[in-house]
Length: 352
Image (tube, rainbow, N blue to C red):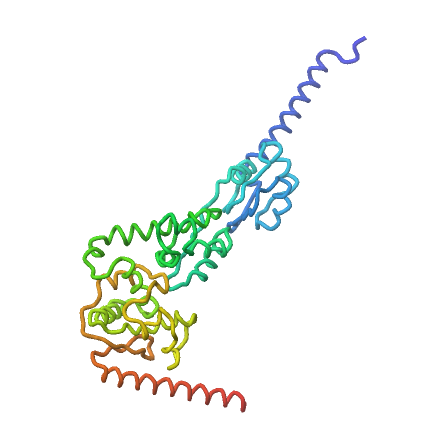
């Protein structure tokens, strides 16, 4: 005897199918619905190593995004996304599990904006790049040596290679190798300077390497861009007259620190001290920006041979040594007055 008539069996099957379809539709909806993962203000995920689905779920709380770790594991197994590549990933607004997991699993990184500042040294630049990218500072610093693969490939010394790290903002993938980062920045120097300014370089009395050396001194000396052509013109006048360059920044470079120079500092025995050597130093002292390079290529035409700092952070320029001596004395008197005011203020604070 049949306990369930065919009609009832058919109804039970229909109910089963409806439930199964509903469950399937609900779970599929969760996989592809844009909103199961949410970041209101935008988040950046950094994966330092190849990560598993379980590791990704464990770190979810640190990402600044709203998601269910257990459901993420289920979604990853269901969709087949179970391994995720190192990289920098931007997450903004509402995303589905499928879009989120596939992005990280396929390594679809979002580029990072990397800024190169002028007037740096190789150690500071290396630290700056390591903060903005995945590689450590030592990896970058090694590139700026004569024996690095990039230096050998380009035929440049490490010092010259560093000086051509032209300041600008660049977009890099976070995991880009240090060598490729440096070569990309070097290509920007080659494009904007060596190629675009080729005619001016060809007609200039200095070679490209010498132009960059002088531009690096101008970069260090000038606090205001509008003064760069005038400072460049002064140095060119001294070189043309076969005078010693006597550029204070080269003494700072020889000492290894930026500070106000003392009388005995000018006596330091160093190949970069232009108070003791004739002509340009043997290499650049920093990475000049395009304005400093253009200032050397297009120096201001004048008769100035001397300059001294002013309280405003600019320079006072002189044609004769006597004018320079008077300007220097005025600058020293101003400094002595500042020291006196500082000491008085210090004494009042101690008395108070």
